[in-house]
Length: 301
Length: 214
Image (cartoon, rainbow over all chains, first blue to last red):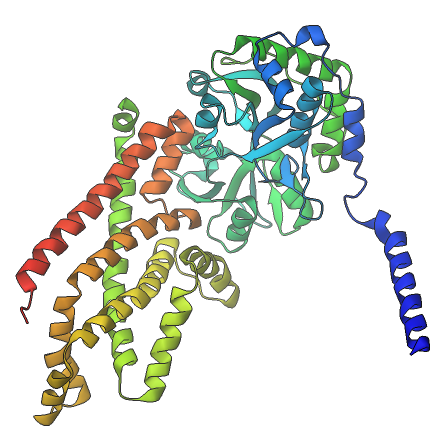
C-alpha cells in the first residue's frame, strides 16, 4: 500500500511538473498581440469631457464593442484562450485603453443587419466590423476614421481560365459572403452574374472547391489568408474596389467622433496602428504596413 | 417604407422562391409523410422499427445541420445537386417526419372497430389503410397538418444560409445596401405572416368542410 501511494505521489509530481514545463508552449498563452497595446496611448483627464459618451464609458469601466467573432485576421475568437484577436479586435482594445487606461472590452457579436440598431439604442458604444463607410449608412450612424482601407478581389480554383477582371463574371455563378460589400459590387460591375451567398468564409471556399460557383469575390486580406492555407485556390485580380472602413458611432455624437478621430491620429503617429497591422493582417500580407487612410477623407466620415 | 418599394423586384423574386420552396417541399413531405405513417402503423415489426428510426432521427436533428450537411457533405461523396433542389429535398425529408407523426395521431383516432371491420370484409392491410383508415385519419389532422405547413414556410428561411436566395436572403441583401433593417425585415416578416395567415384561413375552411361528426 505504502509503495502504491509513493508511486502515485511521484507520478502526480511528474505530471504536474510536466504540465508546468509545457505551459509556455500553449498556443496563444503569451501572444505578441497584447504587447502592442502596452504602447497604445491613454487619454488625458481633460480629454474625457464631463457628460460625454466617453465619461459614461469610463464610469462603466468597460467599452462595449460591436464586432465579429468569426472574421479571420480581423476579429476572430481564439478557441484556446477565448480572446478575440485580429486587427479590428485590437483596435477596439486600444480604444478601450485610451478611455479607461486598460484594454477592457466586451465584444457584442453584431451583424450587418443589426449594427445600426445596436448603435442607435446604446447596446454598443462603437462598432469595429469592416464597416464600410457609405453615405446611406452615414445617415443613420456617425463614422470616425476611416481607419483602414481594403478592397475586393477575385479567387478561383487553380487552373480556371477566362476570369481576369470583374466584368468577366457576367453570366457566371459567383460566390460571395452573405452580408459582405461584395454583393453590391458584383451587381454593379457584372450585373449578369448569378450571386450565390454563404454565411461564412470557409463555407464559400468549400463551395468554390465543389464547383458551386466559378469565382469567389471577397476582401483581399481574407482571400490572401485563404490562398495561403489552401493551395488549390488562387487570386486572379488586384483589388478592384476601395472600401474605407469606419468606426461606427451613435449618429450625431460629434463629441465622441472627434475624440475617436483624435485617438486614431495618435495611434498612427505613435506607430501603434502600424504594429497592430503587423501582428494581424501583416502575418499574411507581406511588406510593411501601408500608409493609413486620411481621417475624414471619405464622404460620410 | 420607400426602401421596400424601391427594391420591390428583388424582394418579390425572393418571395416567389420562398413560395416555391414551401410548396414543393411541403408536397414532397406530404407524400413521404404518408409513407412514414404507413410504416409506423404497419403490422410488420421491421417496418415499424424503420418508421420509428426515421422519425426519431429527423425530429432530433436541427434542420440547419441537415441543410449544411447535405450542401457541403454530400458533394464529398459525389452527390451534388443544385442548391434549390438540395434545399427542397432536405426540407421535404425533414418535414415528412412531422407529417408522419401528425398522421399517425389521426390513424390512432380512428376507432379500432373500423380497422377490424375492414379486415372482416377481406381488405388487405394496404386496402384498409387506403379506403378506410387514412381518409378518416386525414380529416382529423387537417389542423395539425396546417400548422406543419406554416412551420415549413418559416423553416424555408434556413435555406438562405446555404445560398438559396429566398425572401430572407433577398431582404438581407437589400439591407446591406440600404442599412434600414427595421422597415426591410418588418416588410419581409409581414410577407411571411401573410403566407401563414392564408394557410390558417384555408385549413380553417377545410376543417369545417371535412369534419366528421362522431
